Length: 177
Image 1 (tube, helix red, strand yellow):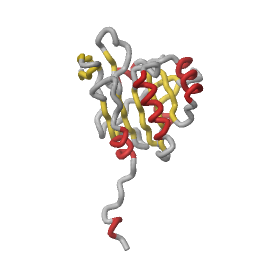
Image 2: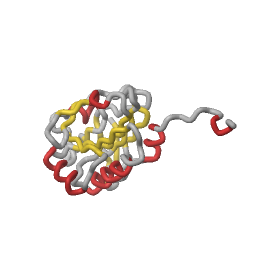
Image 3: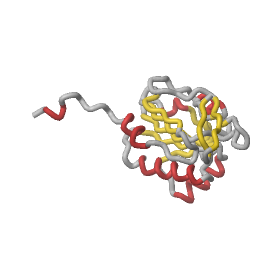
Image 4: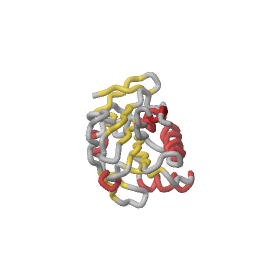
């Protein structure tokens, strides 16, 4: 069990949050077209997964918009924003905000995601929602970055996550020539 903050109040979060080097737990989420989407669909591509309580919350929409912008910078990377919102709500938000790069995903039929990814808020009144997090996976679904954001209403460290997704430069490359 982990603890995060919400406006200065501690909130308990259940499940095991992944760590760098861990194999990513499989998942089944639902897209804006009510289609089931498994982690395996993205095999061979890098993944950047933002977890938010809701896209109807200001922090959720802010993070989704940042993810959309990152989609124009990152190559061979799938960007997902996961929330408990219904696929209908996600579709409405996607259309109104013009999302093209980030895929909005619901845990409608994938409630195991909450526990498997260690983001399950267990305290009332927020129980059932997820804590804010940012998780980066390599092409083989190994966790290369994982941040459970200390305050639910704060943004994650996008720079650290994207740096973890970049290929390591060859040592001595700068001295070649």
